[in-house]
Length: 237
Image (cartoon, rainbow, N blue to C red; front, side, top):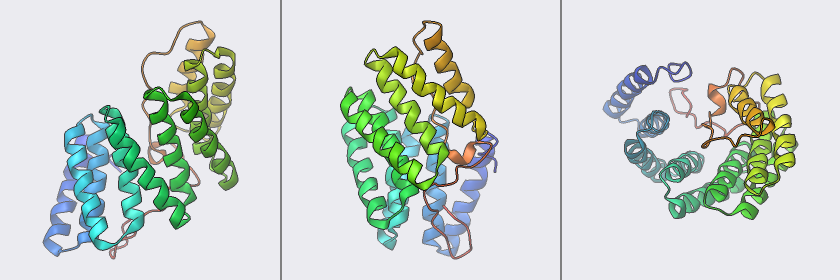
């Protein structure tokens, strides 16, 4: 809950306490989940080295436990961190592994988000054709499963590809669709994407890469996301 309200120091504190308790209890699934959540929070505050360490430790535990959904979730998280640190080969490798696992598990919520992450990675490394391919795959799947949050992210991703290719009118049209969806579902991304659209409409080029806020931090949670990994105590990661 503290992470949802942007209280990152508080979130780190309670997650570290949870990790200590799971460790003392010998609950390795709980440890894996707590490490994953700590890695995500560390990424959100820009501490990429610690985020990487915690996510890799979480991945090792999920792998040892044979928990493929946990592995897929952490691999996807690692892909985002490695992209943010410009480790594009490493990001590509783990995102492809995550996608393969989600598809094998039939987890379409995880698949659609990983596709959008992969599309973003392709774009920032200069592969616009690959980026559009992944975002269009994500758009198709998100509409099939009724995940409007992921649909809006796919539209925004396609808009950024269009902008990078100099197709400003296409970019604006796609962003309008994304803004309409984000606004309608009460998503936290709405103001940022609206600002991107406004910059295009006023002839300015948006600066930098908008912060990608996970669905769980939106005012309304997306209807379809990666399935959580339940623990014996009933918690989920």
